[in-house]
Image (cartoon, rainbow, N blue to C red):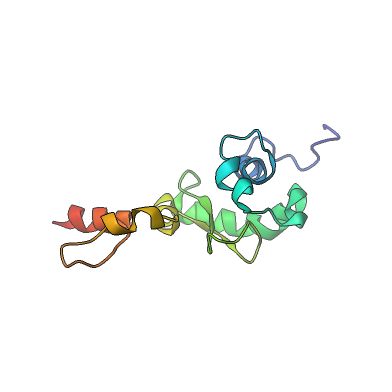
Length: 130
């Protein structure tokens, strides 16, 4: 077994999600850094160690993946103004994550027929019900 990779997870979606988080928050060469690390979205210092991330998040990832499929399991920050940590992260579906994205720049463009502001996904869901 590779000394560098004792956890045996390097080819899993779970591991790749962690790699993506690290890249977005810490790697200035990452194309998404400007929207994460560049805006002060930090990675909990303990999560720099994959094994700690795995201890904190793997069991819930497995539960979510069983219920919604692994392909539709993604990490979501509960409060988009805060970074990636056990307290601020959960597993969610792509749809839920889309609703949680910061879309304040679109606020004035997302009014429903009654003039109420709604997130883009909520408006699409209502339109699909018609």
